Length: 178
Image (tube, rainbow, N blue to C red):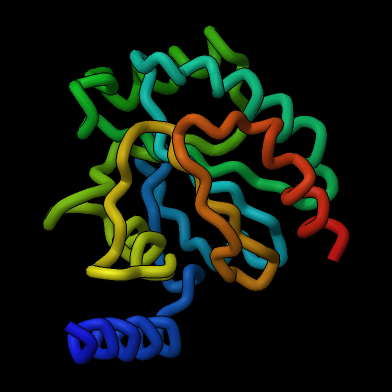
């Protein structure tokens, strides 16, 4: 068991030394490919989202944080996911319409992806692999899991679904002021 944990730790270090968050490409909700290197020198909050979840109202607080800090360098990246009890059954077009009409979302929303399993988007495999691990990368447990990333692309912290966006405002502010 100890050797297995050491091997996982070594694999994590090797992965971290070769791959950067900025190496990934993602597809916007409108089908345009974006390289995350376009977001260098920005504080990122990466969130898997859904339109039919008891936590969907977090869109409102995420948008409020975005409006408050976007000029200081905050960017929120939302990734719809339907892996949790079919809570994001909408098409990309309907997701975009829902977010803009219901919550006035102006931060970037991306195409629907998977965050767990063999078909998880490479970005999410990377995000999970860069967290402290015991027996492998921890899976995303539910919608609205949040990853806070500093201006250099380092994953600083992961927040569970139940952590409300305003609860992490101090962490965001500190990174913006570094």
